[in-house]
Length: 328
Ligand code: NDP
Ligand code: GDP
Image (cartoon, rainbow, N blue to C red; front, side, top):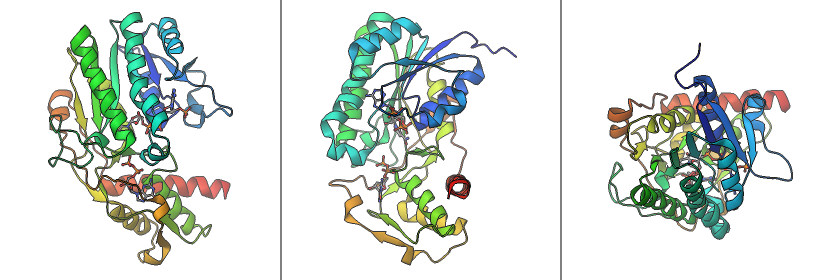
């Protein structure tokens, strides 16, 4: 059945990432024509969108290259632009701070400017992050909480956030920030702590390894399930005027809680001997505690995070058990 959105055109940057792949599925389902910006890599990295190839159209471009963004927007003529591309790993932002600033911060500005000149009627979603709250000024965090980033990644996201607000106010463009708290899935990159734990616990269960190395067990995050968060992105662009929204579960858990839940899920209640602390994985400055208040998104967008913490852990561990059982 044709939906109201048939024929609408969406440009998704970061389509090969976790969120881009879920968002692309959801937009296709609604009838959108979906275009994904992909950068040139020596080895193509399309495993997250393998099942969508042929249904999404890939456009060459890089957030570091202004001309490529202008060309992409001219070619696609998008109704909606979702800027999900970033150097998104906080850990790597300490070792590659400049490239993180270029891609995650200035990259958003480049895309905003391309939209301003080539598609000023389009609607723009910016993937802002709870990492902007960093050393939190109040808890839980909402749309009015002051930012205090704790990493080059957080700093770059704050820059991109304010560039969006500035372009919205200066040029009357439809630009919305989703300030999303951590969201995970079976497609999460391997270096993030949830995926590292899920994969590690599945490997231990299958006898492929005997321990996991982590940096610290104490930090707390508000962890939700990624496909629900990409639905928030779409909803944020369907309201009459642009606004910023926090997306979160409103619950917080520690890395230790995640480890415990993952081992419990596979029937290994005694896990302390199987987790080693390695300072190599700790950060020069960390974010100790994040917990979001999603009230505005609930009231204005009808959006709620439904997947509970234990379910999320189960989804991720089971997916890695299946994957490892197939491949060894
Ligand atoms: P991923 O790391 O999975 O995906 C990042 C995407 O950005 C990949 O498609 C990557 O392409 C692309 N990319 C990186 N550099 C460039 C570049 N120079 N030009 C074009 N594309 C580039 O991130 P997620 O899907 O998890 O997150 C999506 C967005 O949401 C990111 O901006 C992230 O910072 C933000 N965010 C994520 C949260 C989360 O918990 N997941 C929370 C809050 C915000 P390639 O495959 O070529 O590397
Ligand atoms: P982030 O919230 O975007 O930084 O997501 P991560 O999954 O990378 O990290 C979440 C928290 O887990 C941070 O406080 C990390 O310091 C902490 N953590 C502890 N050990 C590890 C580890 O081995 N790898 C990662 N990625 N994070 C770890």
